[in-house]
Length: 431
Image (cartoon, helix red, strand yellow):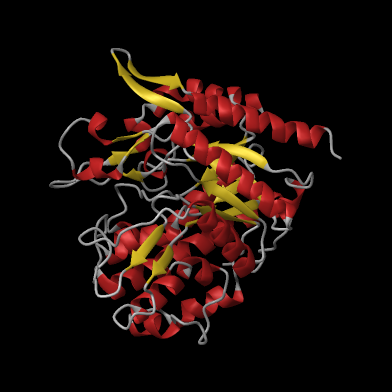
């Protein structure tokens, strides 16, 4: 790592003081299959690999200023030291033609098939940084905004604590191993890109909101709830150099095998966000503890969730802004449901962000996720057709047809377009 990581470059993007509206394309990749587990590649499931031109055009048509979009590491790096940029060249070129600013997800869960043990491979952090630097060198003139790891704590939980995705580690020891590996790769990625792009680089860190409410002070829940509330920020705390011997989880990390030298390296050479991204889903981001009721959490025995609407969104935005001292962006939000339900949440959440901005909270961007529908991760362990796992979340519905998946415009697209136009008018005619 190098100590060349500075902050503040994002101010050039947001100097106009406006709220910038963008979209995302779901880009989860878990290409490793196995008995009872189908690979997940959302670009393949949604046919984005073949319909990419149409998809970028749709984003432009509804007024997206930026697009959160991921590079499929497992496809562009098919073997060690080998690169295939043909498809990504074309997609990023199309964004450039439309004037859409790409915010590139470098890691959205999937590692190449040749990297055995995935995040637990001893060379993982070096390999992911090598890939990130190759991307920055390839697209230095077209892409300056990067998310090193999307939702790093979901990586830790799914791959390290629950044993749900490769490399199938479990428990606190597995979570610690994954957290340290993901954080090491995250920091190396950011420092490597900074070395290539210098002050032009903008880093949009992104993690999943995890709220814990209810009877959190009940004797049977107090310790678990406190740990989870700290753990929700663990990887971001690691890479930003906040985990010293006073951190509430320092003892847990060390007792489960964390390398003290690496912890020290994070402190000496932090990788701080230029923009802190918050992923918030009102129907899923809040878990409820109930007195006298024990849930293990995870997939086997999940805690119930509660929809706290814009109150939860406001709490999470405020917490991330205060904790990391950076401008904040809503990097994912939506509800799965009818067009009317989606429009309702779109308007409520944008209005709440506008209220927060008026009161001084530095919210600089809002992302509806996704542009078009996606397929639930349950597809991995299912056996039926993809249609059984469809989630109606997008501005455009995915509709099966003889020619493949048709993108069908919904009234949600019209509502987003109207909000995007209003935001752009505000920039053009400042008060």
